[in-house]
Image (cartoon, rainbow, N blue to C red; front, side):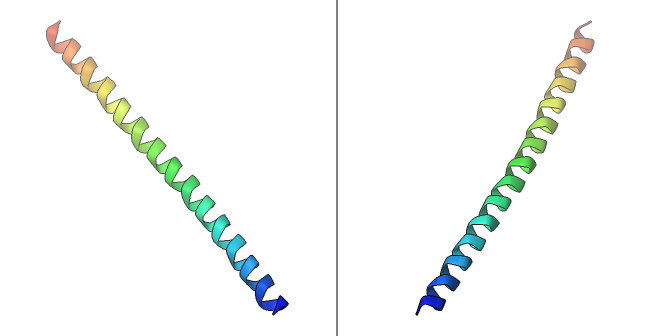
Length: 53
């Protein structure tokens, strides 16, 4: 009984660590996408400015 409980606690901790790692990786990915999009917007606005000049 006690052994099964310890095992379930270990599985729960492992699941929490996995979810935290996954969340961190998703955050980095979303940050990279956001940076790319903002760079694209900056380049687009620079191109638009050049066309006006």
